[in-house]
Length: 298
Length: 289
Ligand SMILES: Nc1ncnc2c1ncn2[C@@H]1O[C@H](COP(=O)(O)OP(=O)(O)OP(=O)(O)O)[C@@H](O)[C@H]1O
Ligand SMILES: [Mg+2]
Image (tube, rainbow over the protein chains, first blue to last red):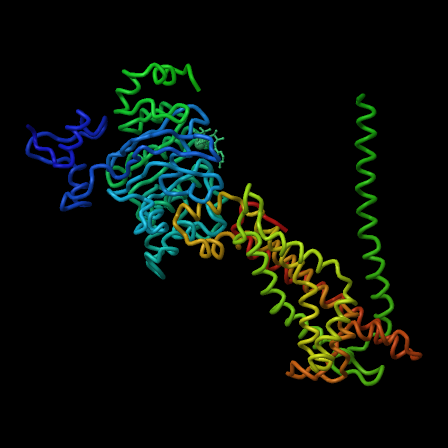
């Protein structure tokens, strides 16, 4: 038996696979970078292997079932792609994970979502801190009507994570992380709406990353971007693991294959299939999945 | 439709829009021109520096009085109106079937906007000046003016807030911003033009009102005193309304001078409002005017 950290052993035992293509769990006495990062984040090895998980989750809008009995876990430090035809409930599912649907009229749910082993609806859960820990990036870039710098630190200010001069440091750090620093360093005080669509989306990513989330929900983050910007965003997303756990809704099957370790296929509100991305695309178990990934549904 | 008929329809539409524009702008220019033409030939700069003496002298007392009234209305009606608008748009929420709540408050503001100002003045006079023994006073005038303009400010604020894109609100929500914090830092920012416009209308109305002020502010020929009660106050519409009836040229000149100064004040307000709006909109997605 090669050396695998306890967390991974658990995952490997259960799923009978490694973390996924692109990230290898090194066998032998050495430890992979992934392991080192994950261990640094969790030195005692007490956090559950799944950063966030849905348990028997059903969602309704005004008595109309949108998502039915979905149980799925999102392994810490990986990207999971969420695919499915339009209207199948992807956004509804995703928005539920940081409780963005709670106040939508007619919304009702059954089942649970657990973050780090604790229900996100538990009374001890602070909604604002939950949203800090579970960030979200939207389909259309939505910078706020304030300067580029203020955009990056908007959440940092709201959560009082930093103040004064530290804000400039945070802004630079995050803009560098998303690869936008060189393009905007001379116009940090300018309006974000003069940036290109792709740059605006990177800015929104920087804003979401600045508050130090553990999980990032991405709802078709590249669907309004050109291929080059899309590639930049995908590259950035890959670089965010294993420090973060990403859930990526996408209509772009190529994107799902390129970026994710796991893929879940949602069809008419049901979780039809879930597994390692390669398996799901190359050896789907369900005929509906096969139809979808070969372009015959949706 | 043939292309000829389409062209004629197109042309007719243009003619109508231009005609409508002329119908709106024409009278404004005509009135403004009339005031300027009558005031300029007799203009004395001492009008700005001396107080009224009977029906002659200057208008310093009236200018300062109008400025004090505007500032007071901005403080009282501005606060109440903007907060009321925020409540209607953001906090009243939606009732069953997703309809916006706060209907009673909304209709109340509409009814208020429909009450003739002279009726409000009379009520203010009977209640505040007589019943409460406040006498002609700054506070009575401010309250009546504020009651008049709060509906405009509240509706203007509500409308402006409702037009703020959902994407901003959702973005703020997803970052974990508290609702009030998001409102102050993200949402209100893009509602500033609408709010400022409603404040502008409110100030222009309070500067230009006559009837409720005759009932509540009285008239005073000295510069305004720092007193809320038992102290009448001057204002620019008084000479316009009253001095015109006096049998002296001096009085007539003062009436036109007051009208001209009011016009200039409103213009200055417009410029100030534009500056505020431009400043608030320098990072905006779509520039509003
Ligand atoms: N607020 C709402 N109230 C009522 N029904 C809603 C609401 N939001 C979504 N729905 C319905 O839920 C279903 C799923 O919508 P959802 O947005 O989750 O789909 P999706 O998978 O994200 O689709 P797409 O790929 O087009 O974004 C749709 O039938 C939609 O009409
Ligand atoms: Mg969607």
